[in-house]
Image (tube, rainbow, N blue to C red; front, side, top):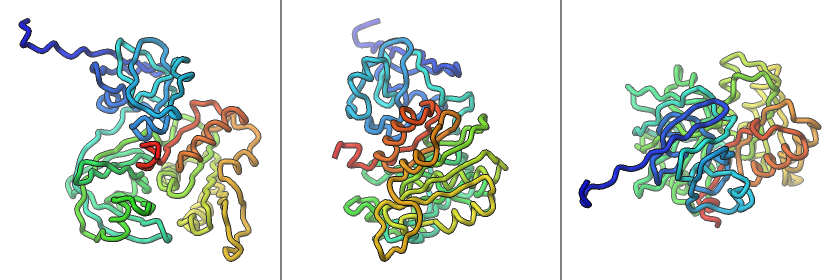
Length: 354
């Protein structure tokens, strides 16, 4: 080989136990990127070193961590062999442990144009947006997964599908719940200028937040704010599939109006005898007339369930809620860490430590 010829890029084998799923990752490539490319469903959230959802135990091998926030992976955790797959690049073959990986293949990820079909305000700061997919396109996803909008400047914004896949048979398209973050260029556009028939570009599906159907454990669904969107998809999916595992939904908001589909949940609970609904409000005002549960939504679960060792928990919403629940349920209520499934809604400010 002459000096002008480039050396081939080294590839390393990444194996995930106990499933035995294996894939190759190139030198300089994040393990998570390689897993997504290969259709292996490693857990993840922000893909940006901020949320910690992709944390796995490294059983063997060496990695180099790219830039990440210390709250997502502390020095002690790294020393103990934990890795953030979204920014860990392999230096050798690597064996990881992730009990969230199943032998079920991920659906293919695709880019596609979508058309805004309806815009409906569900509360003062939540917009329900329905997107129409290309007529000839089949978009397959797991209930609970998300898509990313690709903005004109290349920036991306992630939103969970709020409808289960089977609903596309009667109403083709996907439903999103978008919360207004004043000053955010995308949500300012959604609430100020977006019109029906507008064309946008998306990519997906992404995410490891979907129901594990190979279990019969009782389920706790934990949502804060628009973290309810993927939970709604899970509930629709469970009803469609006839899944009757005992399930309790805890949905938290600051004010009662933040539970923007409260009546929808009440109607579903009436139709699904195994589904219990516990709405929780943290900052009700006298004029709200709220007589239900108050306080922090993750704490309400602790108040009700003394032992979570035989449960699965699916949590979605603000990072503070998801992180608090993850820590408290495992250390104080016996929940196995691998039975906590989460989708943490990191904003751009969260990603940049702001």
